[in-house]
Length: 92
Image (cartoon, rainbow, N blue to C red; front, side, top):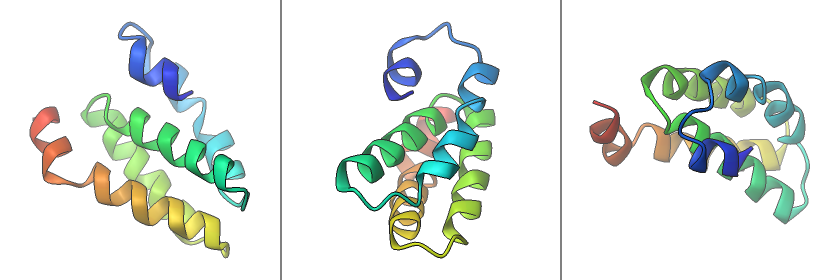
């Protein structure tokens, strides 16, 4: 997911959005490597364009409501970057 979002500049937004259910489902996994991978995928998808940024932030808000330490960590970290000045400037 991450590499596709990061490297493939021709991939359609819909293909990346199709990963959202898997990201949400995996956000409760407490294993460090899994939560880092989920976080990274969410951030990379959200940095592609304005539409995906908005959708990724919305997903982040949904993940934030899950009763899981891993989910809360993922959401907090992802939203900080996705709503940050650097990403906003790049997408403007």
